[in-house]
Image (cartoon, rainbow, N blue to C red; front, side, top):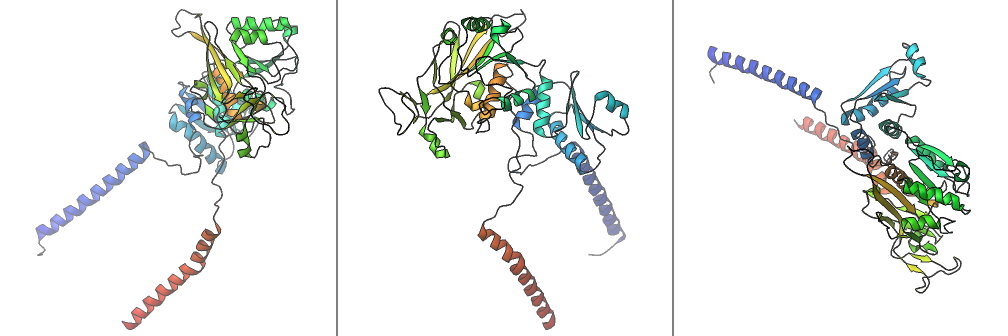
Length: 455
C-alpha cells in the first residue's frame, strides 16, 4: 500500500475516532456502574442477602426508615455495618443510614442515651428503637417492633400450675417469651380469680397447660372474653381439660383420648414413643410456606365441629403410622383397633369467625382468631429448639395478633466458613501443588532451554 498524504490523514482521523470512542465507552461504563449494580451471593445459605422475612417486613413499612450508627471506628467494623445496612437499602430506597462519631456530637449522644460504641438508632414514623446487636435478626426484629402501631398484649392465665412465661424450669416458656418480647409483644400474667375479668386491651389470652381445675367463675370470664371477640391460644395437654369443658363446648372442640404414639420418631434417634413428628401442614395461612419438621412430646389429637358462625381448619397432622394410645405407655406398645384412635391425627386447629365492624368505613369484617394445640411441651424451654418449633410458635402469635405478614426471622448461620475435603481430594490437591505443578514448570523450562540450545 502506497503511503500518501491523504492516507496519513485518514489513519490519523481513524486514530482520533478510536480514542474518542474508547473514552466514550469508558465513560458509559463508569456511568452504568454508578446507576446499576449487580451482586451475586454464592454463600451456602445466602447469608449476604436479606432473607425473605426481612424483605417482607420492609414491604410493610411504606414510610422512610432512618438509621444512625454511633461509632468512632472507621475501619473494618464500620465497613461491616455499612454492608449490612446496604442490604436493606437495596430493597428499600427510602432506607437512609449515616455514621456519627460520638466524640464530635456528645450532646446528641447524651440526649439519645447512647451508651455503647456501635449502637444503632432506628427511627420510623416518630418512633425509635436502639439496638446493640448489629445482625440481620436484631435489626429486623427492631423493624418489626417499629412497624406495629402498638405493642400487642399477650396475657398468660396464672394460678393453676400453668407453664410460666417468666419461669426457667424445663416445662416453662421463658425462652419463647423472650422471643415474643424481642418482636414487640408485651407479656403479662393474669390471675382470673383475683382480677375478676380479662382486661379489655388483651390481644391474646394464653391458656398454657393448667394442672389444677379452673374455678367455674373463671371459666365464665374466659367464655365472656370469647363472646366479646377476644383471641385465644390454648395449649392443652393429654392430662385433661381441668374445668375448661364449657369452653371446649362453646368452640365445638374435643380431644382424642390417650397420648399420640409415633413410630416415626425412631428415625430421628428418639427412643420415647410419645414424641410426635409433624411434617404435614395444611393450607392454612398460619403455616403457609412452612416446611420444617416440628416435634411434639406427649400430645393429644384435637377435633372440632364448628358451632354457629365459627369456622375451623386443622393445620398440624401426624403421620399415618401414628395413633392415639389409650393404654399403659410401658413395655411393648402396639396399636389396638378396638381401643386406640388411628392416625393421621389432627394435632392443632385454627377456629375463626367474623365480627361486626366497629367502624363504618371498614370494608372487611374483623376476624376473631383462636388456636388450639393438643400439646404445650413443644414451646417449653426444653423442646423449643427442636426443628421448627420456635418458628411455628412465633407464627401462631403473629397470626393471632393479625400480623399475618410478620413472620419469624431465622438467624443465619455461616455454613461455608470451612472447606471440608475428602481424603482423596486432599491428596489430589496436595500432590498437585507440591509435585505436579513444580514438575510441570521444571519440564517446561527444560523444554524451552533445549529448544533454544538447538537453535
